Every structure is written in C-alpha cells, then in structure tokens.
Length: 187
Ligand SMILES: Nc1ncnc2c1ncn2[C@@H]1O[C@H](COP(=O)(O)OP(=O)(O)OP(=O)(O)O)[C@@H](O)[C@H]1O
Image (cartoon, rainbow, N blue to C red):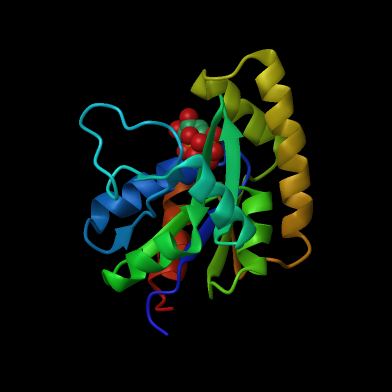
C-alpha cells in the first residue's frame, strides 16, 4: 500500500514542530494534513472542506456513534474531530498524511484500520525537556508541570515498543537526519 499515514508523537516541547517545519520546507509537495470536522460555525473566509468539514451537531454525534473518528473532543461548546476519511483523503491526493498527536491519539489510530507508521520523538531527558519548555517561554509554572507529567507517561508508553521508530532529539542535525530517513523510507 502506498502513502501510509505517518503518526508523529512525543512529549510537548520535544521538538516536533521544529522538525516538521523543516521537513515541510524541504519537501513542500510530499506531505499533507487531514481536514478536521467541527460543529462550530465557519468564520469569514473559511471554506468547507478546506479549513474544516463543517458539520451539524446531529451529524457529528452520528459519526461518533459510527466510530468514524480517530479522535474527537469538545472545546468551548463545540465538537472537533479527525475522521478516518479525512486521513485517507490525503493519501488519495498522493501525499503522505502527517498526524501530530498525543498518546491517546496514537492508541486510537492503533485501534482503527489505518495502516499507519509510528514515530516517537523523545527528548534526551526530562530535565532537557524542562529546559526547552522554559526556553520557549510559552508556559506558566502550572502548564509546565502538567506537560512534564504528561511527558513521563508518554515516555513510559514509548518503552512498550508501540512505535516503529524512536528518534532522540539531542543534536538537532542528527535528529533531523534520522527523522527524515525514517519518514522518507517508503512506506
Ligand atoms: N535539538 C534541539 N536542541 C535544542 N533545542 C531544541 C531542539 N529541538 C527543538 N528545540 C527547542 O525546543 C523548544 C520546543 O520545540 P517545539 O516547539 O518544536 O516542540 P513541540 O514538540 O512541537 O511542542 P508542542 O507539542 O508543545 O507544540 C523550541 O524552543 C525549540 O526551538
């Protein structure tokens, strides 16, 4: 099968965005992201099927019942979700769908019939992760502790062998090389 979806996970602050940004800049036509469903109203300029699949609450609930979502959540009164179809749509456009998701998302994808590949990006240590999150300047003391707690659980899960590849983001150049090699190592 061509273009298996690629699931990238790892603790917040490990460097997923940094590496993905670089990959997308180097290969602008090779990858794609799934279009989420939402029950919120479109904002001006937003296009159905492009920005989101705008869905009624009834339809959204039906999709949940039919187990059509890999993951879904409710934020401030609206539902948001990633459907299996939206991931398959990317492959149909001959692109590799990248899913940047957390441990729960990884488990859901594993429960679905998506034949995905799993990459875990690990920090060299929790202490380094803490320093990077502090250095990024985006966290309050509370959100920092929350992320560190979640990181420990993510790292434990990675120890169970749930992923096809673990890349340790120590030296950025070395990590990017390994990251890219696994991703481009065709499907
Ligand atoms: N190899 C590295 N060495 C040192 N610093 C790094 C390295 N990789 C990333 N960083 C820095 O660590 C911080 C966190 O990286 P980034 O924002 O990419 O993490 P993330 O995994 O995408 O986090 P989130 O899931 O919260 O979005 C950034 O400030 C980034 O510049």
